Amino acid sequence: MTLGEAKNKVYMLLDEHSAGGEIEHDEDIEKKMTAFFDMAQKTLAQIKKIVREETIRPVSGVTAYDMPDDFYALYRVWADGRPATNRFRWRSGQIIIPEGSASEVIVEYYAQPRTIGADAADDYEFEIAEDACECMPYYVAAQQLLPDLVMDYGAMLQMYNYQASLLKTTQPGENRRIAQSLFRG
Image (cartoon, rainbow, N blue to C red):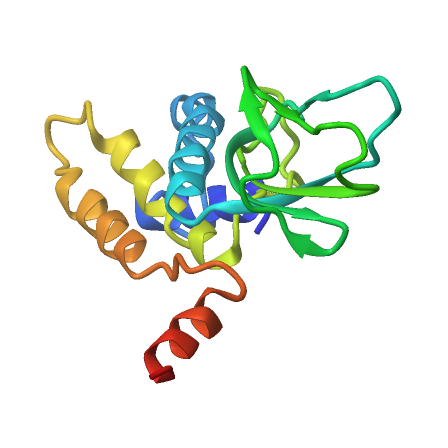
């Protein structure tokens, strides 16, 4: 979903239409919209995580390797195509790879979305999954209504919370591992 598509959904939720049915872009609403979408995307990325990977090809004489700027938390580590258990250590946002322990290390990690700038174009693509994107217009509409003394923001926030509760949060391969453990023995 793009920022422009999401904004239009918020305008529809807020019933911001002209007499002819066209969506009217309110300047006060528009000024806050991008910041609210940034907050929503970052919150939803903690629920429905963004998995990325960093490939490290160890270099002789180097044992500490930095993680990417968007690194939020570790998911799993692979060394030469196999799960790496207890082989490596973490120190201050770096992975410590002992020399000669692997020719290639793949770090799968949960990523934090980049900040959406105030001047972001409407064609900006959100970094979270599509089903998580569908939650955001409710969150943003609720934030727009929060200071409104006439309109109740509660219904929009309740819809956001409900939609977020429905998000599938398992990672690829987790269902298979769970199923295998149930049928063993």
